[in-house]
Amino acid sequence: MMFPTRIEIIPSAGIVDQVQSLVPLTTTLTMTCLPHHGIERTMRASVELSMLGYNVIPHLAARSINDRAELTRIMRDCDVAGIGEVFVIGGDRKQAAGPYDSALPLLEDIAQYTGGLMRAGVAGYPEGHPSVAALDLVDALLAKQHLATHVVTQMCFAAPKILDFAALLRREGVRLPVWAGVAGSVPRTKLVTLATQIGVGSSLKFLTRKGPLARKLLSGDRYSPNTLVAGLEGQPGIAGIHLYSFNNLDAVPNEAGPASSTTALQPALIRGAAREY
Image (cartoon, rainbow, N blue to C red; front, side, top):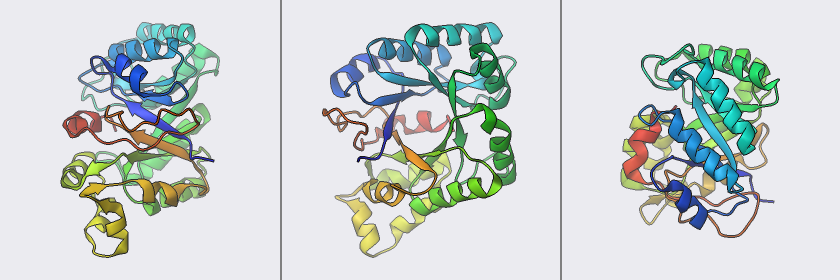
């Protein structure tokens, strides 16, 4: 059985047509919410794709929601479109647009408005967060887990980092399954830039070492996530792969199935998409 995989999409111009032509309906999509895009664009693309038959999970950034009336409209749109799951983050907007400064109060209102029926993922940080202490991140997950259904990690490049994180959560009492954030195939020349922008440099260090592992991971001057994915499959607490596609969807398979193959990064979109986490 293939490892369950979700494909992350950026709601850029023309993305609905692009997904329709390249991605099978059986593929679960997650739709980003970037600070410079706003939630309206996320929801518009999510609703369109859901109405076309895709299983879509919109990202809701708490600090980008203007008021509770807007959240009510979002939940109503989800209900009409048959969207039953969202991914809730604080977001990287410096000033909150409305009453939600972090993910927790937004999760509480979502649960209240939907009678607890809306499934919700929350963010996890195996390599830490630039502005939040490690212990505070675990405490935040403990506080949110009764309102959440799973954790999605930041982009990582080393299976041990993700497995250690899942084990840490279990030790600390966080029982949520973990979806591992994984990049698709990416040019080696972009790895250092990517790692710097999203703060996951330590898991990339092994790529500079000589030996069979490095040669396996770097083929034709491109990073391949295949070894990383193989190292996660079947491990305790790992539910599946959250694949950062950066809208390069050409490698998504045309065959229907519970999982999708890796896709390549579109380097021009790295900087914008990295802001979400």
